[in-house]
Image (tube, rainbow, N blue to C red; front, side, top):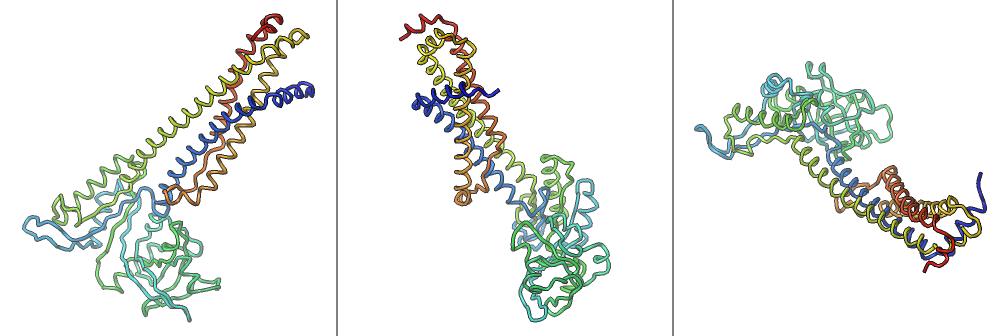
Length: 410
């Protein structure tokens, strides 16, 4: 049952010793506050890294061509490296076990017209697999498919902002025709992309269609792929290096020529990010738990002092017939109550500071800093436990001394 007299004594003791109670609460609140802020900042950095690649598959590899910067095997520097369909087929067949999805890209700038609306957009001609490399989310209709590739169909998939620009408030977009630089294409789908506005102002068409219409050749500007998810980061990095080596040999490019064929492997970036976040996480843990230990020591010392200060009070209670158990209980409950209240207060301030500072922290590459309430509650529970143990031991000792001895204590 709820003992009102017991709790009245607890609150009277807290009120009578306000300075002591405030010092105990401040120690706990500050420890939890600092703990929450540190872990919130660490989570904010992790969010920044995650958002940087939100619109691309995490296992992507981008293969770009350029010009040679070094003479090699009798060939002069300055040669233009041009990828073709046969290079796409070579990569797809020779490295098949290590590849999940693969696509080529052709880039064009086009003027799009629909009724009275007109605007300039980037056109990407791609294979159907491109949908999974860019994490394209189809909101209406469908994406490009293999039949479109085989038949060089004049169909396109448009970004949601293209739809808003050209179709305004029209709802029935799929099935309509858009004029791209003088040629009509049927809209078969509308997509959304978490990469932002720029990604949703893109128009996709089958790669074979673009090759037939914009050049009548088999050239491609870029080849992108995702490596097999079964590969770990080191295996994926080795795959990327081997792919670069084989392509340089195929195009007779010097091994140390860094501009002729450039391969960006997300595995290398992910490995670097993982290493950095691991080191950061360890530092935050050390600092956070160091702060927590300081709080434990602080609350423990305060509780020992509190019991020592109340020795005479304990003697009077015993002289009036109080049992050792009741004496220990009132001290422990007071300690746990102050620690819990202060810990929750520190959590509220910490979360509030993170929310207030969130818009300003983006300048420092910290996005949406937040902290797990479970983690902070565990930290608070640790302080409560430490406070309870720190209060129990001296309280038990004090409750066992004789009243006359306790009353003589200075």
